[in-house]
Length: 145
Image 1 (cartoon, one colour):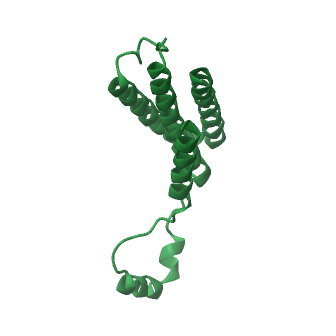
Image 2 (image 1 turned 180 degrees about the horizontal axis):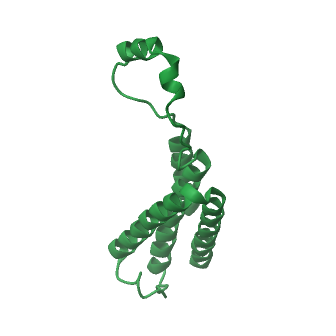
Image 3 (image 1 turned 45 degrees about the vertical axis):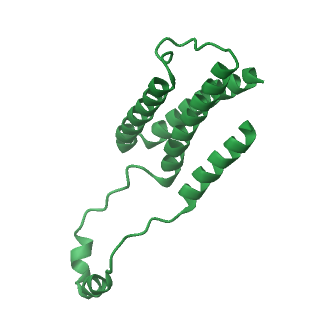
């Protein structure tokens, strides 16, 4: 049962990453106006790098997925008689989910701020955070069996 849940979660994450972003509404007239605009106006606009690159987006989405896996593995472990050792997380599933959601939100905004000046450091930090969280989740799953 747990492997099918993990495969389903990974499939959802992969599909959400692979779907292209689309804009709503009809922009046919706006496009004609933009094409007719002088190119000198475009040259004077400052070019900004995106704060969150696609690679960083993948890491942030996978961070939320790994937190979800950690909650799932902890709930399974509790059902088999295990005890939560972290006193902050011990208080029910709702409290655990809200704490994990808060951790994901704080991680997102911290990494976004870090990426503005230190993009490589943000990527390395996300790799470490995801690796540690995944190790904890898989350790809990290993102890369930």
